[in-house]
Image 1: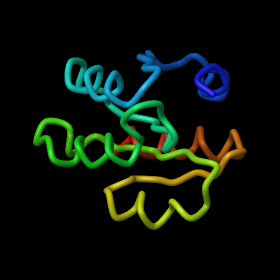
Image 2: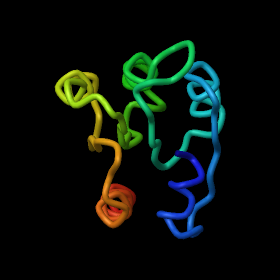
Image 3: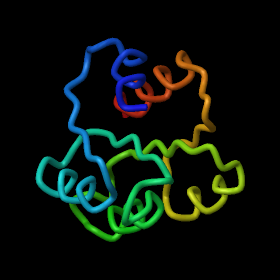
Length: 106
């Protein structure tokens, strides 16, 4: 999935990656990214918990977060946790690219 996102986003961005939820949160706190693409199903701490922790952190709360999952029932929970966008796997590459560009332009 991470490799697919690199291809979809055309290499025009700097990427940080994390293999699990805790690592993702640590990277976000250390780097304060412009945008996060977050899978719901992460080893250890899940993506929704990471999103909630980001929204509770004043430095990370304004960071746009795109949530990606294979579970359609997670859309409402992701929205309630503060997701900026929600994509079902498999997602349309152009729609993902457009969403990222729109969120970064804000």
